[in-house]
Length: 258
Image (tube, rainbow, N blue to C red):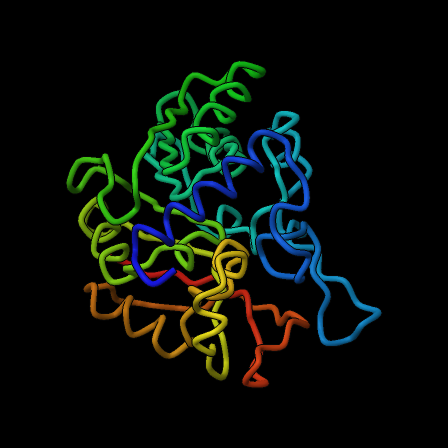
């Protein structure tokens, strides 16, 4: 688990199994990628990560598209409008793409990119269930997006960039594909404290959105170094998972403008 390729291969394997309907692929660690609802510090409180989606948003999602793998609701903060072109990074079975499609309308377009073939197949199966003509799913990696320069109005992503080994390259690619004035809105996992080497080497924790997470400070620095301005944390939630260092995990939704 000490190379980018081995990390990606492990993540692909586990998410391929999830797309094929296998359960218990990722440990139930109350992380972003293990359940639709996550516990907060109060053991009696449950955080519903879909709470910002309206009933209309939820009605746009075909059965089988929401696999419960997100850690936020980036589309709810993305200021998407009719005619825009939206890019969803790590689109999975297509849940956020289908929500975005209703905002951009027939004149707009939604592109979903995922590196797992099984997820692309699952997303296209879900697309066939509904009358959606403005969504296109593409196989590809976030560090090398199959998308033209300066072609995207909004980038969204839900608990995926923490899975990418080279986060600087990921945000550089987001900057490349966005139009001037375009924005990204990303929900992701950050840590306070440190992640031990043992945790970094744990394949299940990588797939569970923990081992690849950066500190909040590092995460925001990577975004700034990519060239973005007006960087804002729009929402955050704390999980009950405790790192070996004693640190904690947070889901944040962050935005920035090119």
